[in-house]
Image (cartoon, rainbow, N blue to C red; front, side):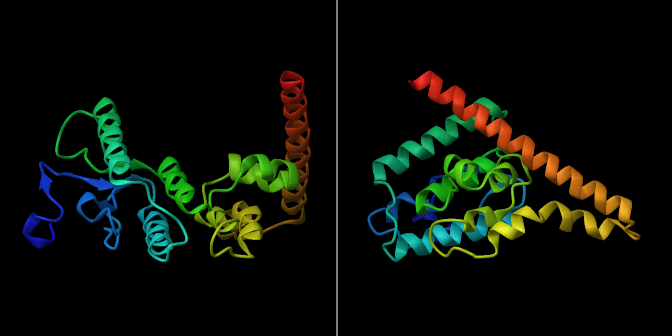
Length: 204
């Protein structure tokens, strides 16, 4: 793969790429990255987009990637984890869990949302990010290239997913949905306050 296999060597479908993106032989400059060379348990397009964000953020100097030694350690750790989880075969070499891998990429460029901050400043949004569907625009709440519509998109995600399945919406259904949202929000606030009290009691 690339330069007749000399730049990025592939053996038994095993490839040494930091975060399945960066070849070690270009670690001094990191001007080359492979995007989308993964088998996620989830959607590949949001991952590829976040990989592109990581590449260009690092290329512009806005974020720093680890040293070659640290990259090698990351590669080995992922390989060992893969070996513990799957049977050894050519099939299981570049598989990732969608949620955890997206969080890892987001941490590199500082766009992973802080649940502690959200819990104190925006409990309803914190609930959606923690317990709702993992939507890629949660990585547009903070960090580089923030999207102003990300919060609203997350809060209305369930409604937008449900809406195409409803051919006729009655007032009773609308009232039920609104009541559910209100109860959920109140329960979330109470739960977070209780957790905060327990945490403070434990610390102090």
